[in-house]
Image (cartoon, rainbow, N blue to C red; front, side):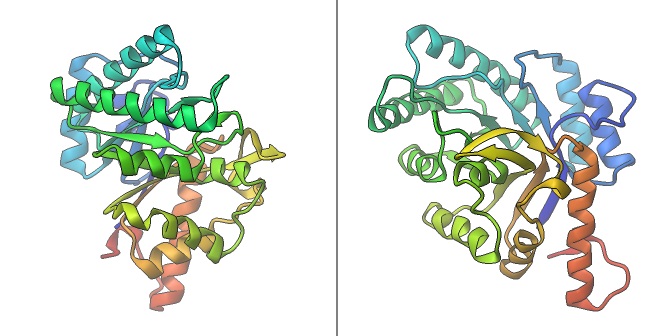
Length: 287
């Protein structure tokens, strides 16, 4: 199955609560996924709204994910680690209350540590975080996002390695970040196929994928740009998803948030029309 949605409240939604955003995603955009954003560390959601999100999403078949605050460092010193655990646990509590599938977190920075030392710390601290989630009965999975800058821990290989070592942790595949970090390597079907080939040992039944264009230089992301201005094409990725019948959720992180989510849907449905010969088709009909 393929699900599509925006990262956060759609820009064209007049209401600015997550509850408003969720309704808009379903009732106006007619999409079936949303990633709630706690990225700046502001938790503007009470328990009542979280419970509404769970009930509405379940009733209307909208898959929810959550992004924890941007600044977390699971390779940091004691003070940074304590702050990171606190933020992630708070996001985890609300994620669980919402019935969200994955809580997306940024793993951390190398700082003065070697790559090997950073890996060891992150594996140790993600394991500790998993124990905290179990103790608090948080069922939402921890998702480690691939990162787009050289000084930040989070290459695809590094994320896969942590997921191999820590049971119950899943990768979050940010294609824009991977594209920036490898200095523009995602262009063809084969390039995207290589990502799924690397992920194969994890035996994933579902993939959470972030999509946006990025401006980058020398293997470092500067900022997000609209998909049509990007040198990373979407069509080869969509072709693979259809051919391999992967179970994926595609989250638009573009500055043109819901516009590019809808663009992904339209491109997907064009491909389906070519493959099936049908004039009218809905991507949600894919089995």
